[in-house]
Length: 447
Image 1: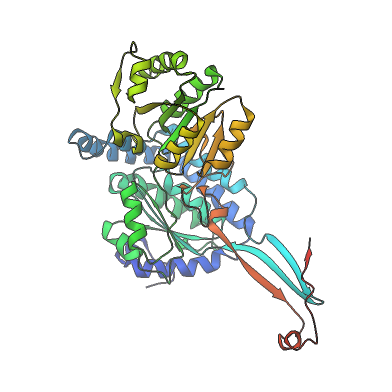
Image 2: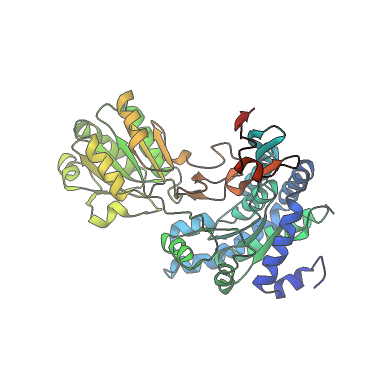
């Protein structure tokens, strides 16, 4: 195969060959100057913007087919919503790529320096992971988000989108590669697209070529990837997010936070699925909350105590035990009245997915305990769970939200795509001289 393969050759290549090409590209990307990476990103953003009509047309063809799947019950309405884009959506894609280009360079940063001895200095310096494989469903904006974050951080990427967005993904990928082809020093294989479900299983076995797998999809899909991969996995887990309305809550704030958390974009993984209400404010708060939710088109599934306190409210249905652990990704919410703060902590610990949890309270001590004791990637006070997003955090874009604790947590941006290496600069130093006592270590931290 030629050094720079045609698209036809790439489509005929096996996953192992594509991964080897990505590995080779990653070595060149790791040394590519920031200015060239940023220029390539800006060119890609311009290309996406100028060819918006093609992207929207491809997406409309995907959506036409997907609409039949929704009608036949093979696709959920929330998945269909995530699939859709528009001229505005394409403009946002381009804007996110420019945002990434404008971020500080994550590579070559000196994280720590230690003088081990005179003339022997150890530096801890940031560097790329290498090759990242991302498997995702529905959302077409993942292609430019992942490709831009990977390029900015000096990584090559293998992308596998869902079949439901095949035309949109293919169009975006072609535009991306075409834009980068104008830069001779940017390797053509910086981003490569996989096209079949079978290729995912093959990719999971390539631990010598791929450094990290990021699955974005259902809880079951992420679990499958984690169980079958020989490559380290950074799981984009489900989002069973809570808003807890405390006894000391400002109920005006509470209503605004709950409604935004649930209805602003219910298909997102950071939308609230359960609202917990302290019984001290429940009699006053529940009627207005239920009325606002139902008015917004939300189905409310309530615990027995809530049904009793809001008996006059319309639209309430009894909650089942499964509701407390369900990620609806839709206009449905479960609602529970609790005895106290301790019960709220226990409920979140039992049913939460360690994604994002929010408390509404004017009691600083209670908020501090919530921050300290809730185990989640994002823990909020008087704020909507919908803020859990890489763009809103100032990361430019994100690969997804990790509910794991190792390597990266929460919205995964540039830092999640870097690691570090230790650089030791000496002058003929040997360990024997320290073992014999001839020399001793200083271990002095330097700025």
